[in-house]
Length: 426
Ligand code: CMX
Image (cartoon, rainbow, N blue to C red; front, side, top):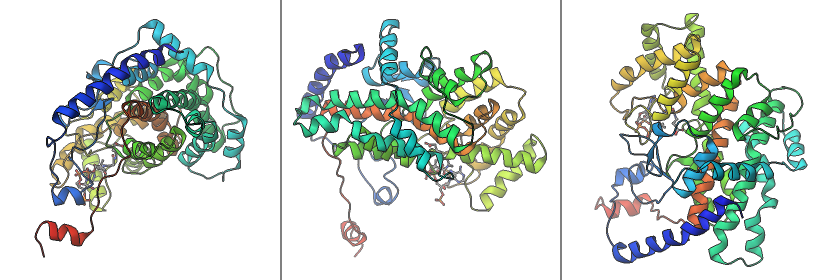
């Protein structure tokens, strides 16, 4: 048994017992109320979900298992996966063990390449990527063991096996989608000695001078991993998972939500907006030009991508981390300079629009410019990168939910007439 699985087998029973005792004592206490506006407003602010892997206080941003993001931006994604699951960072031996476990599972079945090859050449990279995950569903350990009558307390164990199998393969699948979709040439075989992120960069086939792109990839795959339980991708995946659909189903389902322009797809829109301004103004625009352009975008009824958030009310610490990386590695790059200037300009514009609750940049505002710098210029691909990282959080949340024995999700909906009656409007 791997060290991570061994550790989880030790800690999960105590956590489950703690929750049971907590509910026994306090189960009937009220934790939230719901107004009519919230019911019609995407349930913003309604506390009614449970997620232990991470939380996002509006005034702090992402906290993973009690550690603020700014304190763990130097960690590798494998370390983040360990942290998400166990609540602790791994020591060197534990990290090496997890990396070896992933390496041992990285071989992608041949039929996956054939399925990607058979898709229309102009398919969106996210459609290709998610199809590849879904088509591997027949490999699910959970589905097989469930059909054989697996006991409930082993659900997490089988979900863990699925998670490792999937996570290990995502860099190769993502890299192939890139090469195939954008005509970059034949598939590149995995590097047996490289870690998860470095191997991904290797298989993408882009230049990686001084391993600088690999460093960005480690940061990128760290920063996008998890963002509590209520965002569209995590919540969709957890709802699907709550029906005991296996992780192949739930992950691909959740990532289909990530492909929406108000969620993960914003990162492709965002760089597009930055480049549009550069094209219009013939290089890095001035602050005044950017201000005008932002107003024009708003007046045309469009959103300024990369700005605003459903929960956050500060500059996203994930944006801060990307900005710091850009300043260190590409301060002279005009695209990066434009991102910086947008940050210095756009919040003041958005603050003047009363309805916008958060005028600050989110994770998507800067990441594209950094990828662009390293030659990853096809922005419709960017959400695949987000997905590879977000798979860590979705998998961890799913394993924890199975270990805690959470039931099928089933909130109550009502039609307009029933709400009218409820509030005495008729
Ligand atoms: N540009 C223009 N208008 C914006 C805006 C922006 N960046 N951010 C919010 N608004 C508008 C909303 O569209 C909404 O308008 P309507 O009432 O006319 O529909 C109004 O302001 C109120 O929105 P809000 O309560 O501040 O924000 P929401 O929780 O409804 O939406 C989000 C959050 C992210 C969808 C929104 O800020 C947005 O569309 N931003 C741009 C797209 C983006 O960057 N998405 C990535 C988010 C990161 C992630 O993937 O998690």
